[in-house]
Length: 375
Image 1 (tube, rainbow, N blue to C red):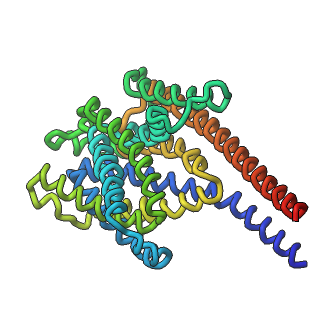
Image 2: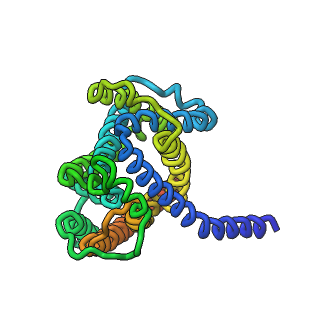
Image 3: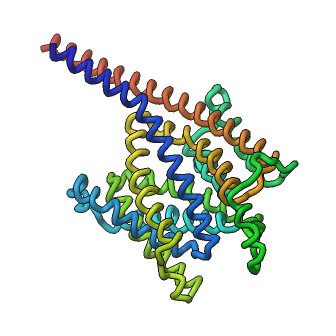
């Protein structure tokens, strides 16, 4: 009876996970889209990127701190200068460079365009891993070929979005931005064209952000080996990142008025990014990775790209061209092809490791039997 009850509970848990895991990843993508759109509106309203990063990191550290003290209260004793050095590098690549360059790129382009580069992070990480010889191309296998094909499609799709416009698509008759058009036109420098000013510069910022995110993932993997903590690592990275961003921000701008927060869109963006993007998203992604592996969360990234494109057009009035649609489709197909190949290789490696472990146990068992026979 106990075995049957335990089996029934496991079946019920598995059934709940089948429904709740995809729902959790959809929530993560919805949070991501909200962050991109709110950040774009806050930056358009005059908020400095480094100011946003400093306050966002402080809020995130406050949110994660209770989790660190409750669930990892003993791990802080493992802190040393080596760990702090890796945390500093983690904050530099993940907070100052990755977030900073992304916000500067978002400020110069659009929410939909910047969301493309968030989907390219796994591809750039893959390319860097090949350069560092941490991963092989494995062109002799179908998963390896599929990964390369997916990477090529993602890069090609990005080039199509960046270089090919094509005809303008009138997908909806009126957007919220159209209602504000008369007021914007009456104001100095009004209109939505300023969003696309410096498209080349914004693209370079976004490329640098994508590269920084990829390097951050590599540094984070190394940090996890010397300091196996989730919450302490996140909290300390946010604290160090806020200090580094404060120094950079003060060097860029000496106007203290820019650091004042009011009860407006800027404060909402800071709280939203710090609480939801770091707190809720961190927990949901960690839960999904523990249940389905690291390939599972990125499988939902295309949702944020598609929804961001639609909402960016409806809310902010960004034009959608045929080239953007075709390039986005190429990126989505390429991302899924890459993740499919990556998942197949991960399963193959896991099966090979399990076979080696079983062979090792069998060898030990045979050795024990041989010793008993000799005795």
